[in-house]
Amino acid sequence: MEEQQQIENTIIEERYQKADGETAYRRYQKGKVLGKGGFAKCYEVTSIESKKVLAAKIIAKSTLKKGRTRAKLITEIKLHKSLHHQNIVQFEDVFEDNENVYILLELCQNQTLNELLKRRRRITQIEVQCYLKQLIGALKYIHSHRVLHRDLKLGNLFINDKMELKLGDFGLATKLDYDGQRRHTICGTPNYIAPEILDERMGHSYQADIWSVGVIIYTLLIGKPPFETSDVKTTYTKISQCQFNFPDHIQISENARNLISRILILDPSKRLTLDEILAHPFMTSNPIPKTTHISQLLSPPTAAWLSQYSQASMLNSKQLQPELVSVKSTSQIPKMNNLFSTQFKMTQAERIKTLTEGINYLSEKQQTKKQQEQTLENNEQQELSKENDVVYVIKCCDYQSKYGIGYVLSNHHSGVLFNDSTKIIQCNRLEFNYFDSCNQKSSYEFENYPQDLNKKVTLLQKFTQYLGVDENNTISNSQISTIFVHKFLKTRNALLLKLSNGVIQADFIDKTVIVISPNENILFVNEKGDKFSYNLEQIRDKEKIQRRYNYVQQLRGDCQ
Image 1 (cartoon, one colour):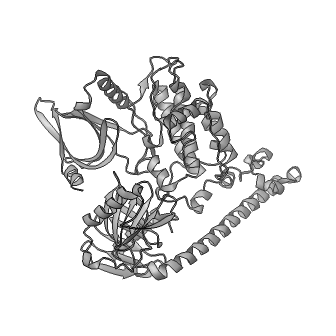
Image 2 (tube, one colour):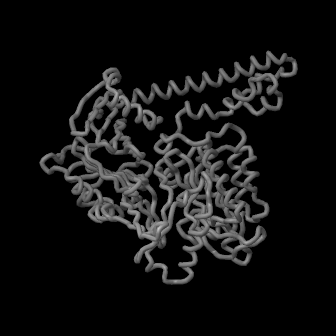
Image 3 (tube, one colour):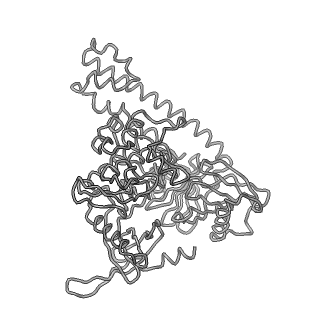
């Protein structure tokens, strides 16, 4: 914790020459760690002059002693600096001092698809279509400039505060001298690397990036990479033989299976091109949103959001005009085929009426199902709220750059939500509960627990100590903790927390806090720490609280 505080107190100075030859400085406040690579660390930095927040990739000069390493860094800077596209992380500046090289980049507040997948475990098809369309836009752009990325993976696909996808990290990128040229360097990330890269005699080109796109699609839909094993050599063997399958217990569409199978092909010349991927039925069978919703960083899309991009929605928007109604278009809806069995005997007006009734029928079914699900959720949450709606987070430590979120609840229990989606919560002075990434609970005594949990138990104790839990208020040995932080979402304005008791809480940067219980009772904590309780009706004339409540509602999606 002290190390983190020291980092945040560091000032970076960029020395430069003005037009008149005078030496001047730009200064940046170094903030939290965003990530670490082989030779670099990435930090959030804020310009002291302009207040603009950026990401700074910092490379120690001591790691650049080899000529090859220096050459790779120069290539990365040169290539990235030359690229300008809405779906590529914007290169801002580069400078150096006696110790480091600093690359300043656009900050993507919502982390990467890798962190998103850890929180969500799997992503819906419509979301994958949305991210894929943006990724292909970036790849078409760099390939048109003869640039190969060669390290496409979830960790290099960033999400900004507008929920736009941004391709980043050009550390392994290369530029071809001509379109037919092939590179022979073995490089990339094991799970995503193309088979022709592993065979350096064969050489590789643009199709190696397309292979990685296929791996990305599979990983988002299934939840893990297609060739992943516990051993890198075995993974490489599976890649070289294109050995993968679709697990029976996870349902994905036939279009998705077909697309992945036509990309993950050993012969690069037989893989789909980027344009062919865009024209594939996987990408054309329904409308695709320009971006996903920010609430989907934390939980799956709502039924209402999904319905906007369903096949029926596409028909509704495109085919209710007489000139667009056709037998071919209606055959795209297998579930509605019976409605059109007398298509040729109908007048055009009758066909439009029948199509409208079919769409309304589907919409009513979706609405009924949604209402049933909502009623069931509400009943469950009401049961939970009877016991738990007063429990919320009173102290929190955001150290997700390295470990996760540590916190103390209002019942004085402390816990940690780790970056790998596991959770640990202090039950009492003698025991703790541990939840794996699938939320399977195990209970242990502090004096007797598995060795592989040693680091996490130590972190629980350090977070608890750092957050200053009052020993006089700590829970007795008879009390058992059943409430913990289940998910979190960090935005520019707040840290959003979802608790296992159904409570949604937002800690804003102005030090105010709003806590919303499952039955919509509201606890508001102002900047001074004063607490006030309201119901929905009572906050209607309290603009400050209503504004924060509305902000949380926009983000919570179906977190309830």
